[in-house]
Amino acid sequence: MYIAPSILSANFGKFIDEVNRIEKAGADWVHIDVMDGHFVPNLTFGAGVVEALRPNTKMTLDCHLMVSNPEAHVETFANAGADYFTVHYEATSHLHGLIQTIHKHGMKAGVAINPATPVSAIAPILKDVDMILVMTVNPGFGGQSFIESTVEKMAELSTFRAENDANFLIEVDGGINAETAKICAEKGVDAFVAGSYIFNKDDVKQPIDALKMAIK
Ligand code: DX5
Ligand code: ZN
Image 1 (cartoon, protein in one colour):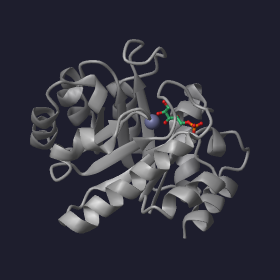
Image 2: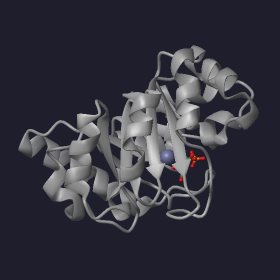
Image 3: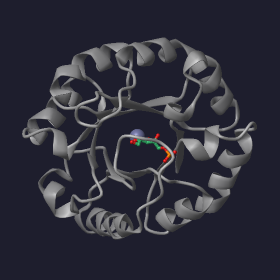
Image 4: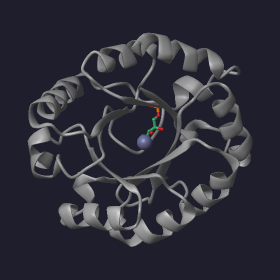
């Protein structure tokens, strides 16, 4: 089980301090939300942030690319030191090839699906990926509410994984708190992204501990 705080909700002026703070508090991964103002309306940051964080933390750098044309960024993120490079199913027409390119660049490949995208859409690539990210909100902004109808997709992925000897991780992202994390953990989810739930507190250890307790 992995707790992955999203720095989208951190103080943008102090990324390194914020990352040190969550690492000390027991986080496993840093979730980096890359938005291009095109695939999603919001605009955030790119590989430069990954490069700045890499020498400052031992945590896994979990990059979530909410961008059109993710193909264009594989090499820069690999060079910057990204561990996971997760692309949206909805953002590419060449998913299978893109997964191969991500692997060729030495990164783990993740595929994200929006709330309206069914698991059946990604069935052909489930044995080729390292992680499936089930979006539990519509991507673009932090602080939204968890969409309940996404839960059955987690169960479907867990069943597929068990029956087909596949070994991708299942990650959830959006509206995650102790209560919603517990619901997801019961469906076999492995990695939990949380932004506002963690960074809105002065003491980030308290929400991280609460999440760990909830998913145990
Ligand atoms: C949403 C992003 C999320 C976001 C989650 O588009 O992908 O990672 O930071 O924020 P919370 O946990 O506040 O819903
Ligand atoms: Zn995200």
